[in-house]
Every structure is written in structure tokens, then in C-alpha cells.
Amino acid sequence: MEENDGQLSLELKMIGLEDLSEGDTLIEVVYSSVNYKDMLAVQKKGGVIRSYPMIPGIDLAGRVVSSSDSTLSPGQEVLVTGYGMGMSHTGGFAQYARVPHEWVVPLPDDLTLKDAMVLGTAGLTAGLSIAALEEVGLKPEQSPRILVTGASGGVGSIALAILAASGYERVTALIRKDYQKELVTGLGAQKMIRPEDVFLKENPLLLKPQYDFVLDTVGGDVVAHLILQIAYNGAISLCGNAAGLALSTNVLPFILRGVKALGVDSVQISHEKRCAIWKRFATEWQIVDRLHVQEISLAELPTTLQSIKEGCHLGRTIVKIG
Ligand SMILES: NC(=O)c1ccc[n+]([C@@H]2O[C@H](COP(=O)([O-])OP(=O)(O)OC[C@H]3O[C@@H](n4cnc5c(N)ncnc54)[C@H](OP(=O)(O)O)[C@@H]3O)[C@@H](O)[C@H]2O)c1
Image (cartoon, rainbow, N blue to C red; front, side, top):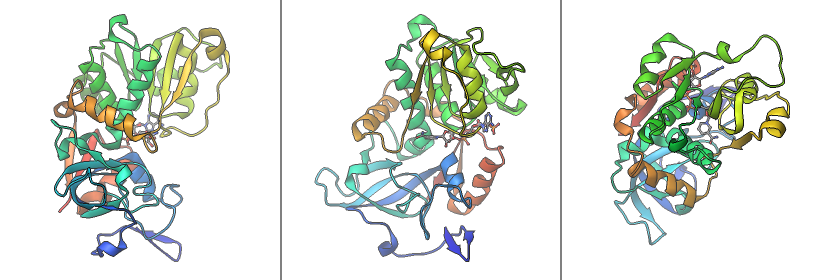
């Protein structure tokens, strides 16, 4: 990404290793993945990239070339997501990346580099959202009513797959388009609703409880209306803003029903917590084969980023580098 005279351009270019951001670990990238944030990164005033030129790409999986950290050996398979990658630090849409070793997650046994990027930041975020809800009582034995918003997207579709693999049976998916039905039912959603089903004409302070737990990826008015429909002692996890940044609600769901709102961040989350989620994907959450994935080359990236912008992207897209 370059900026010239206020105009942004995204193009494939040959540059040198010396153009990569600082770090003590050099990685040969094998796969990257495309996330909502990557789409924002290539928009003017997208609020993601802080200075140009910049290599976008918030995710990568590849092999260590060299590292000053003795626990990382040449050839070792690793993944990196978040931190400043693709924002203020050159990112994953490149053949090589140089990062601080503290950012590097050794690839767990039973996950391939490709699996890691099928999941990517979207998977990490879905896993963190479910872990946050588990901490406040989500468990399959109680057969809770769960709603996943943005269910056709990366975070939402992976969340559906994890919930199905964990034995949850009363899962509703919030989608916006007919063609998304097949995807979400294939991932285990029993019911589907539309945003208009949660938007109510009047402006009540509380509504009949419909869900015990909500895993939200879209924010905005959708959340403002959903909070009023969460049952006693229920909770909502919030990770995204695709439907808007503002959140206008009232305190009654929190003070009368004990509803908990849980913020989820995948960017700065501790190394220990991110490793724990990746380990769950390698063991109890073996869902990669169930996900809707398309593989592209770096040259096809602009088309995929545009489809995310236009709201016609489905599931996950991974980028094969080289
Ligand atoms: N906190 C974190 O660390 C973190 C990490 C990853 C992602 N996120 C955020 O999570 C969100 C989802 O990311 P993603 O990678 O899953 O994106 P994605 O693959 O592009 O999916 C976005 C989903 O949101 C839906 N959506 C968009 N606008 C909507 C609206 N106005 N009302 C209802 N649904 C709407 C889309 O449905 P349509 O197909 O119908 O448009 C799609 O299902 C983004 O806001 C992203 O920034 C946050």
C-alpha cells in the first residue's frame, strides 16, 4: 500500500528484506488469510494503517528462517496474528515477514500451516469469544439458547462450527441474505433470523428473553436491540463493528437481569491465552474441514477485499504465497 498525493494504491511489488519492519525473527510466509480488518486497511480513512508504505495482512503462517530466540529453530512452523501486523508493522501479504519473537506462536501438532490460516484471526476471535462466554456460564449441559451474529462471515461461521463441535444444539444464526442459509445450516445453526427480526418498531426498555448467550460480531443497532432480549444471568460477547460503532442502550438488562457484556480483543491478547485457543483448535475443536474456504493468490487479493467491502464475501479466504 502506498500513498501518493493523498491517493492510496495497492499493488504487488518486489522489495528487499531491508524494507520489512524491525524484528528478531524472519519468517518465510506460506499462507496468509483475509479478514474484515484487511478490507478496512486498504480503504482511505479505514483507520487501520498508520503510515505508508505498508504491507497489509494481519495474519501469516510459515517457517522460521532465523531468530535470535533459542526456542525458535530454522524451518519450524509458526503462525503470527494481530499485534501491529498489517497496521504499523509490515504484514502477512508478502513472501517474508520480520517480527519480534514474542509475537510468534509455534504451530500446534495436528494443525497444518494451511489450517492455521483457514482459522486465522477470525478463528482466534471466535475461540476467544466462546472462551469468554464459557467463563460466565456457557456450557452444553444446560442446553442454552445461543445467537451468533454475522454468522456468514469469518468469525461468525467459525463460531457456529465450534459450537456444533462442542455439542450445542439450540443455535440461531443472524444472517442477511438467502444464499447464506445453506452455509449456516451446514455449520449447525438450527434457526435463522434477520436483522429486522431483532429491530423493533417501538423503543422498549426490556423485551421477552430470547437468548441465554449472544456471540456478536457486528455491533451497532443489532447489539442495542439484542441486549434487551438476553435472559437472566445471560451474556453477550462483542468483537466487531461491521454494523456500526455506536451502541445506544439502557442499563435495565444489566441491573435487572444481570446480563454481562464481554469485550473480546484478539490483537493484543496475551501469548498464553492465544496459545491456549490454538491448542483447542488442534484438539477439541477440529473444525477446519467443515468450513467454507476459498484459496487465492496474492494477485487475486484486491477482488476478495472488494467482495468483503460489498458484503458478498462468504466464510474464509486464504492466500497462498509464492
Ligand atoms: N476484536 C477483534 O480482535 C476482532 C478480530 C476479528 C474480527 N473483528 C471484527 O469482527 C467483525 C467480523 O469480522 P469477520 O472477519 O468475520 O468479517 P467478515 O468475514 O467480513 O464477516 C462480516 C459479517 O458481518 C455481517 N454484517 C456486515 N454488516 C452487517 C450489518 N449491518 N448487520 C448485520 N450483519 C452485518 C456480514 O454479513 P453480510 O455478508 O450480509 O454483509 C458478515 O456475516 C468485523 O467488524 C471485524 O472488524 C474483531
